[in-house]
Amino acid sequence: MVRYVHIQNYRCLRDVEVRLEPLTVLVGANASGKSSFLAALCSRFTVADVWSRDPKLNARAAMSDDEQHATLKGWTSVRGSGGTSPFGPQTSVQLLQLDVEHLRKPSQLEEVKSLTTTGFGLANVFTTLTRKGRDAVAKQFCQLVPMFGDVDTRPLEKGTHRVVFQDRWQPSIWYEPSQVSDGSMLLFAFLLLQHQTPAPDIIAIEEPERSLHPYLMGELVKVLRGLATGKLGKEIQVILATHSAELLDFVEPKEVRFFSRAKDTGETRVEAAPIDSPQWKKVFTEYNDSLSGVWLSGGLGGVP
Image 1 (cartoon, helix red, strand yellow):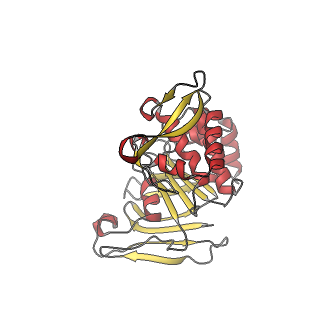
Image 2 (spheres, rainbow, N blue to C red):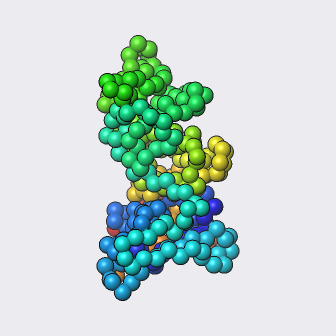
Image 3 (cartoon, helix red, strand yellow):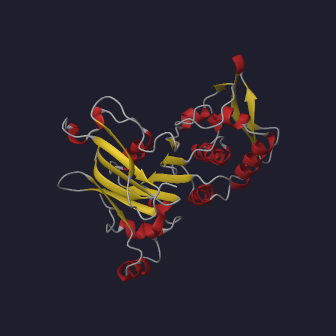
């Protein structure tokens, strides 16, 4: 598991060091650096990504799996047109920026074992699962969204197909993706993550809370924590980027990293909750053990 990531001169990340948990939540206002952090994990660095576009600087990143953080290994730096992920080929990172319209689109039938960044080809991933895997995903989905009785795929013209959803009360009625809510489509896609093969080492997700009812948000966090802790198979480290206060009440304070921008320089600052300090415990109690309340109070960057 990756314990630390250190990034320098990449976009607004002038010099940040982030300790990661099995499940880590990056929270901050818009443009606070969360997306840049995720991009640095799996993108090629380019000249346009360098801090202040300064030609004298290198954007670079490193990671460590050392609990004691003795050294950072594998610096990747660039002053030019290309580079690689700081994790290298030994650690696979899947970035998800799911687009509901892409999830709804029919796709040409082919074997696909993992989601694309935007979720296009959702029907292919579901169809590629084993029968047992498809049944498990459909059952879990219908338990969480009990308005539906089943999930399947159906063909269209010229070898394309799409995911369809059965009405719970009228089994003869099947809904097209365009007739299903955004939140339901997103949740269905997230439930497929536990069945991808080969499983990535890290899954980084942008705004997983979009369009989800608060109850489903909590259930999704449970699924993702199950991935991160190995309860659903291989341990897959999960990193979430959000600006949702509601999501914070479903995670542990130790799992959250607070992103903000320095008012004088604009560079990103990253803080962890001081969970071991008496002052933190006092404040947390005052806000009824609500991490969202503490964050929105402005003490940890919740107010831009």
